[in-house]
Amino acid sequence: MMQEKRVRPITFMVIALVALGVAGIVHQHNAGSAELYVIREFLMDTVVEIQVPKRHQTAARQAVVRLRELARIFDPETGEIAQINATLEPVPVSQEVYDLFEQVLTYASLVEGSFDVGLGALVELWDFTGSNPQVPDMKALEAARTAWQPMAFRLDPEKRTVQRTHAGVKLELGGVAKGFIVDETVASLRAQGVDSGLVNAGGDLFTIGGRPAGGPWRIAVRHPRNASGVLGVLRVEDRAVATSGDYQRYFIQDGQRYHHILDPQTGWPADQCISVTVITGSVTLADLLATAAFVLGPEAGMALIEGVPATEGIIVDWQGRVHLSGGLDPAQWPPRIEVTE
Image 1 (cartoon, rainbow, N blue to C red):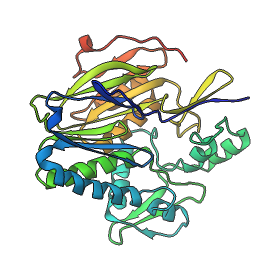
Image 2: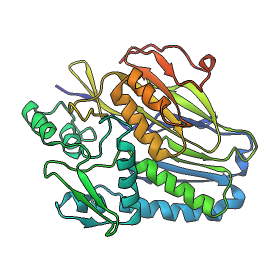
Image 3: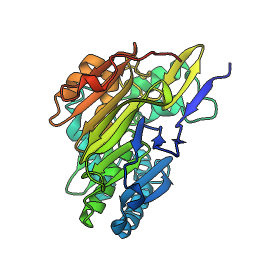
């Protein structure tokens, strides 16, 4: 049977919005956008956009150089993660790769096994980015799930090495690498004196300060069942925003939607949510929390989000009910949406 496939839709709405549908964020251009210097590049299988005031265009060009370097380091086929996966011996890594693994390890205790970087073997079996994705062979899927071990890596801070600790585990940083790269790009811009701007990697974004024209950035969250629709609008300054959704990479087989957000405990797509958006202090953390909350489901997922200081979240569950953290105004968001395929 042929499967209907959806892989990373990227849509540009040229009048008022730029929609980067990978992670469900829609950035609303502000008044005074003519004074912005904008660079877009296709990196990490997505569109990366930097917006800064025109006076900071040199800083933006330098940040793009940094972006390219990080994309090379984290390339899953040729970068340092591939080297780690090729052996069970400790592998010397760059400071950036070490820092990201260290962050993942630090956050692991928060997420109750709902996020893991060792799902590479399962991700390959599901093959969501292939030309004909389908439900994997059950025996192969069970073997990969049984071979999985939680957080199966070891760090050595003195030698700055990363080591896999289980042969059946393949490390895969797709859930957080993009967010980490945005954070590093933001750090590059700030180091050069940029105090207003936006870095957006396919919807995982960070707003530096407020808009150049004044006031907060307005970030519209994509409707998870309408690619051109908006669920609601966030007003943020110096905040990271990231979304995990079941519409980003998926296929439909026998009337059932299968998406790329896997539950580490089962090896199957998590089925309690259709979209989770997190607003917090770093894109790395926002990425991780959005994925973890999606897997945990609306109640436990919102408890996770509410338990992290200075963090807010929007969860749309499988029935279309919209759950909000305490710092968001319910009047600005629908109580539920219609859920259809």
